[in-house]
Image 1 (tube, helix red, strand yellow):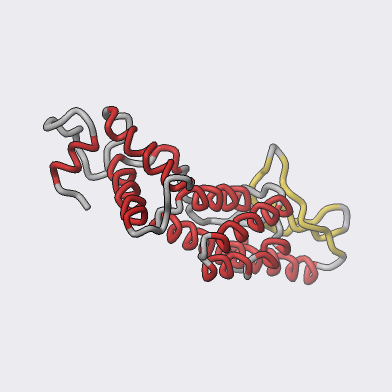
Image 2: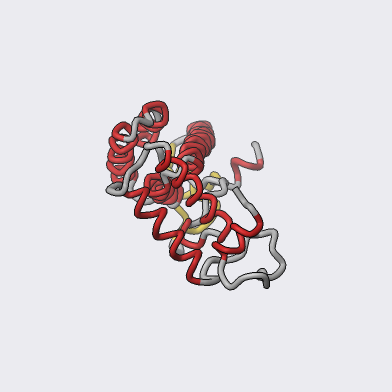
Length: 217
């Protein structure tokens, strides 16, 4: 039996039945994936669980890729909403709620003209509905609430370029987010330093002036 399978679940004999139970305890209990009359049936069930694990990992990777693309394009509010769905699916919350949330995200993407990304998410909905609660070894994006100063600065530059090109205006969410991040960068060192920094810069008293002085784009 593949070692990666046994890390998800294992087969044990209970009261004359062959049961597939979770390898790790969840809320103090081992999850029961079903009990069967024969060991062969239990092995088949174990194989199904492993298959679901792989499908779940691929699904989450695709959603993460869509979220990253949205983030790079400066559509950070939808990227954040999608990250919330990813966390919900990975943590085994109600998949039905995740489908509802993903449906709303698809509508938002279509309104933004991001039809290709909307279609990519839409194609995953049937798989989300079929998902079973199986542990998934995949790195989920960390919360964007504590983004680094350089990342915030780059987001502002991206949104400002979209504003200059007429892609967004003063009444949209992206413009207000751009102004919010720019104000925070100017207020002082409230953002965490970029990963490459060993110490905060001494040339200025806020990130905005520091990156302008460096000529970051």
